[in-house]
Amino acid sequence: MRDVAIIGIGCTNFGELWDRSFRDLFVEAGVIAIEDAGIQGEEIDSMYVGNMSGGRFVEQEHIGSLIADYAGLASNLHVPATRVEAACASGGLALRQAILSVASGHDNIVVAAGAEKMTDVGMDTATDALAAAADREWEGIMGATFPGLYAMIAKLHMHTYGTTSEQLAAASVKNHHNGTMNPIAQFKNEISIDTVLNSNMVADPLHMFDCSPISDGASAVVVAAADIAKKYTDTPVYVKATTQASGTISLHDRADITTLDATVAAGQRAYKMARMTPDDIDMVEVHDCFSIAEICAIEDLGFFRKGDGGRATEAGDTAIGGRIPVNTSGGLKACGHPVGATGIKQAVEITQQLRGTAGKRQVDGAEVGMTHNVGGSGGTAVVHILSRNR
Amino acid sequence: MTVARFWRKIPNRYNLIGTHCTTCGEHYFPPRQMCPTCRRDGKMEDHKFEGKGKVVTYTVIHTAAKGYEMQTPYNLAIIKLDEGPSLTGQVVCDQNEMEIGMRVRSVFRKLGEESEKGMIYYGTKFIPE
Ligand SMILES: [Zn+2]
Image 1 (cartoon, rainbow over the protein chains, first blue to last red):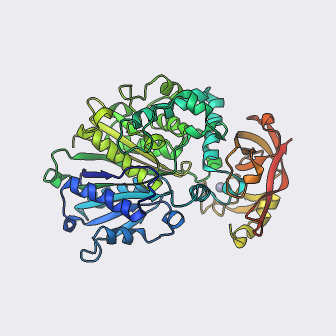
Image 2 (cartoon, each protein chain N blue to C red):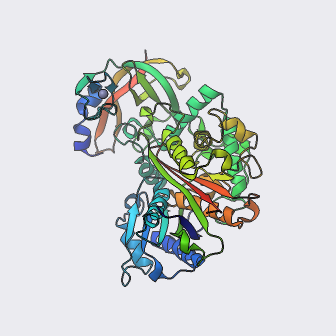
């Protein structure tokens, strides 16, 4: 397998973008990434497009072709474009497919993009579409919602490890703080522990401010064979690991409800592939669709002992400047969670950190970063390790 | 959910019928065609569960799933049946009674409905034992 590098990144603003269409967002992110990489359309060998539910959110399928067409790559160049779906991990998985196609030697330059347009439908429909990432026949029909599933994880985490609502809230407070420094973030306001605890209860013990928002947005990265990367950029970011793991789609079939074993497996495979340990990682973008998801992720990825995630978050260990900065972008909570775009946005953030261009969010001495993207309540996990050094 | 999609699992939903692998002895609910442990070596047969178990974890849902708006707040739990498998279901009781580890048993109840003219879903809920 060949070494692969990220040579271009692009992201739209995340938020309620009512004046923008699904295809507008995709093309905007793609163009930013392509210009950042300094490549021409003729140089793009293929595209992978992450999207969870165009069919439900904008009543559009056949997303690969749509995007290739509106990116100006279909009518003359006929660039192959493949849609990838794994619920909220669709973006991360599209990036992984792009990396694999370059690593295999089949392609030299590939664009991975992700997008979701979630606010064209009402909140009810959006919530119902998201619930399709869980088991419709044996969870959804019982009245399970997505926040409800994560609430059950939170309840057991609190019961088993003494995690408190304040500790959960601390993750949201930190992520909002980081979001204030990110120009593309959906929310750029500080919140307090009390803001979280006084917000509406969605599913006990998760309040509204424990939950990531409904968002529109797109993100894209250009990956290339490492041997040609320097031709395009002085600061290529090298892919040290790309891994994916499956877990049971239903939460009730998980051996330990508080552990996303797909995350554990994808994480362990990534450390092995990169020949690294959690100590080698300078910052990580984890999948914090809910505050408890961030707590579980930092434990399941080996940054903290099982059960210590809440206390560590409260103590500031995951803040910028802390032991392991987590979600410097603002995470899904504050940056926004247009589901298909999230996994790619994580790679955009880590790339900025490794290039040293993350502005006020910059982590000092950033050499190696990780992304962690989850589909559903843990049915899929995708992990990437990125580095400044080849 | 379409009528056919609901209808074909009615025996399982109404009577808590799952599967039992006679090769390794594991029980499964929801029913599975293939044993995750033995895979193609597993011999699967139907198994009717007693319907008794304990709450592994739970939540009280305030923002409902589509079609469940009239029921809020409702208690949703993961219940470990005495025969081994766990499933997701509602527990009908005061939310203050809910507790991790509490014993529950299954009852036949209306789960929800699609709309005024749509399908009504029946199935299993749980009550404190
Ligand atoms: Zn078996």
